[in-house]
Image 1 (tube, rainbow, N blue to C red):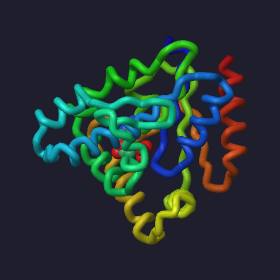
Image 2 (image 1 turned 180 degrees about the vertical axis):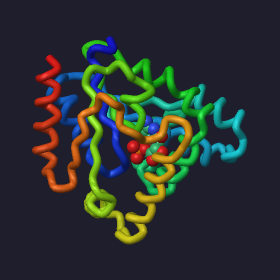
Image 3 (image 1 turned 180 degrees about the horizontal axis):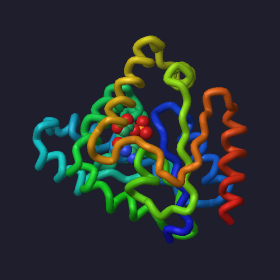
Length: 218
Ligand code: C5P
């Protein structure tokens, strides 16, 4: 099964989600949006009043996360939380709980279980290094923080959310710093990943480069 896994890692706002959707359409593979799992855990911790220093409480929630991914929707205890997990507040909490090694370990099996025939496109921070280290195709996307903030602002404006670009840039940089410097599964490219700097590329260019890599891998 590992043979059919394509990993896409990189910092926030770099275009991983768009690329992952594109590759799913092209291949018919399943999608793992691992960020959505961490966001759902953060949402659950906030909702259920589990403090960040309550390690057993967080691990228990991670092990029994009452979340379902149905098509493009996320259900938490059967309640649709799809838009609720996309807020900057939830993202910030997600990156804090994601820095706890025991929490990451508790979510590992759940992520691995997404690898089902005919294959998987796995989007996250440690897909190629920790969750699917034997995946034959690994992509690592980068872009300048300014460009990523611009993209995020555009996305939020399209959703009708009023935003402050300076604040968004700062939030993105703080979150990336935490993701890159944490001890457990830091955001780093796998040695065998194809790195693509998307700063000056269109999404079409990035999709084409990724597709070429998939075809090369057979
Ligand atoms: O990708 P997304 O922005 O939805 O992820 C939210 C947060 O979850 C990230 O900032 C990161 O801290 C965490 N995350 C992680 N490992 C993953 C996916 C996401 O630590 N594989």
